Image (cartoon, rainbow, N blue to C red; front, side, top):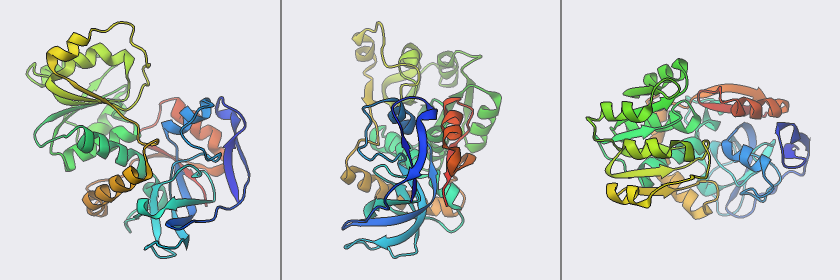
Amino acid sequence: MKAITVKQPGGAEQLQVGEHAKPIPKDGELLIKVKAAAINRTDIVNRESSSGYLNNPIWGIEVAGIVEEAGTGTKIAVGTHVMGLVNGGGYAEYVVMPAERAMVIPENLSFEEAAAIPEVFLTAYQTLFWIGQLRANESVLIHAGGSGVGTAAIQLSKQIGQANVITTAGSKEKLDFCRSLGADVCINYKEQRFDEEVLKATNNQGVDLILDFIGASYWSKNLSSIKVDGRWVLIGILGGAEIEKFNLMDLMFKRVQLTGTLLTPRSDRYKAALTTEFASKTMELFSNNELRPVVDHVFDFDQIQQAHEHMENNKNIGKIILHVN
């Protein structure tokens, strides 16, 4: 089968298409004929580093496709259209997926749309509800609103959380799109100080929850933007990982709960439990188009380098998809 690996840690030029052995499903696993896979920041982090999260030499952590073979103990029939997270190997014509992580694709969605769901919606769901404990009528600040996780988080915050959503992005196009997904307040971080705008929007109280992809460069403004007893979940470090100076008393005075998390390195059991709950809460909403995957661009399989570069240029609104079969 054709699959994509990396020659050595580095830029997008290190990605290569080659021939690899077709995987064999073990007990509790499904062999998926991949129709579409999605590009993630995790893929770029792993590509650039020699110390990635996954042992699989084939890139890719989420796919949509057709069950071709089912291992012993699985309950999903051959021929079923499924989407879900995999332990690497997604950039390929075939991949194995733990059956507990397979979600049946709603009939109204294409494979490309389905591939845009697992990583970003599961990340957003976990961050908002399992960790952030978002409740109805609370306020949430979602950074990088035009990203894959951002577009998912805005929708989940409104459709399931019934929350007041404030989001940031760097262009009018992205902010207009965020508003179309349900965001209540949209802030252009390139033209406005988002902390000042957040305080204006919350009667100087700050938000109950921050979903933070940025990290170090937003540290002080996030601290100004959060309410006393607020929750702050860090899921990315696009703005750097090291803060030169900060006073722990600032967190203590506001009684802030700061949590860091990553989904990809978590256990199979955790991902299975998260997938089960997420599917039970959202599949009907996807079927009714009340939730929708956001696809920015679909690249052909042999355009993998261009797909990675497109993400690195931060031009996308929503997900970047790889058409496989």
